[in-house]
Image (cartoon, rainbow, N blue to C red; front, top):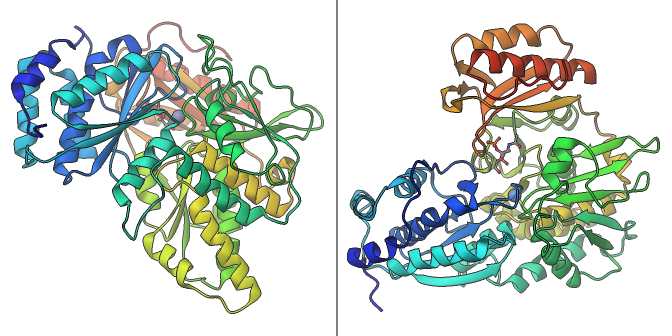
Length: 550
Ligand code: NG1
Ligand code: ZN
């Protein structure tokens, strides 16, 4: 089969995937994400872009994931994954947007020709794309659109089937490192489970097992995949029950369950009975986010979100590094403006770890975390992981340790490097990370929770006629435009003890998000809705004014 680009063939295929009229697509923080019925042409074109990216990167394998994460079932989306499992390089996001918006086949071909010329791509190079989808019904049709895009440019297709998003990132890195010194693992689903299971055992072996954990899988792909993972881990070290595992009934995916629901509603998901002080966790629809929680003895719901996981992980890793004798390895934590103020305070003042704040979006967190020897990054919503730099990995692998304490800590650090998915936040890997630390510390969820008390916080959505007029600075903590709005927000914030509030346009929904926190629940709710009302009044609010509280 020829590997070169045949523009006539692209035009023929493209005729079957006309761009819907009147819609404009944008490759944002989560790739393309919208109603599934609008996505056929977009995904067809993403296939073409994936192949071009592979050609550009000397025939490395590129990943494509079809998912809309925690969004409702009728939505879908698509993301490209670079060779080492990272998010697509930012410059190429613009090409994705240009391709998606080309209004006919001729324009599409011209955009492709431009990408080839500008990037000096050799059209005759081979290209390979590995792809997967979550359990959404529309995924079947959209995978076909992707395959047509790949065939239109004579790419090699590797269908990885139904997978979690982090499994697709994992396999992409495995393919591109196979047989090298940086080999990331076996490029199979089984290879993924084995790697995690072996590492988990190394940390918890010989320690008393924790009581059973119930995991809400959002009725998504995490359900069958967590069950599969559990098969590789003996019951004497992990007792897990998967609930919300119905991936066959229409309308159930993410419906009143899953990590996003639990985080935003601050209550247990549908279908979960949770006795006091027992821990449970929720995954999101593509299993790249996880949050923990429990009910206190008086019935109060307590969330252990991404900030709590970051604090738990950073504390544990810092302790191991100290015990290993490799104190020169530095640890840092990366958060976004959505991190609870109490968590930042705990990390900096109690753990004494440097904390950086970056803009929302995994790529920003990931890149910042790479600046540390060990970079822990988590979004409050439960998406996150830990990156060990190549040099810190080499030092940990090489060190022999002088004392039994050194040796034991080094063994645990080596296991952590394998346990933690270093390509992207991974709910299954993060679940095992938290379970391993809690087992090691013999902690109940309440003991874990005692590190610090979250400031009451509230997230409100405001629908406006054009969210693109909102421009932010200072890692999205301040508004530059609309002019004058930030000063008015500041005046409101000053009226509340420990008050903090910021406004930013969402990258995944057509809304503006307002976040607020303050010393009291009443103060925080009042602040959130006053700021939301201000945004609505001064920046083109449409539909109902946010007045739930006032
Ligand atoms: P947007 O819609 O840009 O706020 C949301 C999350 C992000 C990130 C992306 C990608 C919040 C407040 N925002 O982004 O943290 O996870 O989705 O899925 O949780
Ligand atoms: Zn997700």
